[in-house]
Length: 130
Image 1 (cartoon, rainbow, N blue to C red):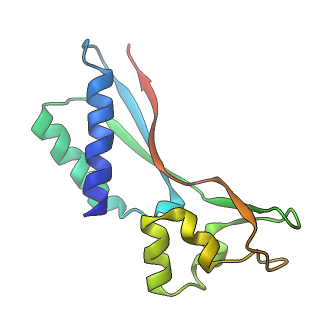
Image 2 (cartoon, helix red, strand yellow):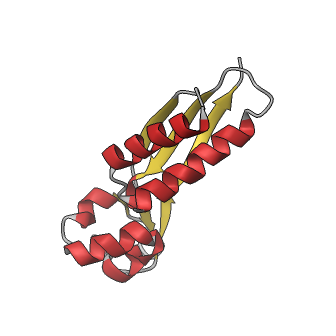
C-alpha cells in the first residue's frame, strides 16, 4: 500500500529527529496532488508510531494543489481538473504527480506547459522540541 510506505518514511524521519529525547510536535503536510487516502495514511502512522514506541503527536494537514500556466499565467486548483480525469489517469497522478502534465491542460489556454506551485509531496513541516 502506497500510504503505508509514505507513513513509514514520515515516522522514520520524526523518530530520527528526536533521538536525543524531548517533546515533539510534528505537522505532516500531504499535498493534495498525491491523492493520499487520509484514513489509511493516519492509521498507518498510528500503527507505526506504536510499533516504534514513538509518543509524538503527528498532525496531518492537506495542502491544496495549485498549478500555474507558463504560457498564459493562469493559476488554478487541482480540483478544477481532477473531476475531468478518468480513474486510471487520477491513479497515475497519485503515484507520480508530475504525470499531471500528461493528463491535464490549462483550463484557460489549453497548454500543457505549467508548473505545480504547491500541493505536491508529503513532508514533515514542523518539528519542535519544548
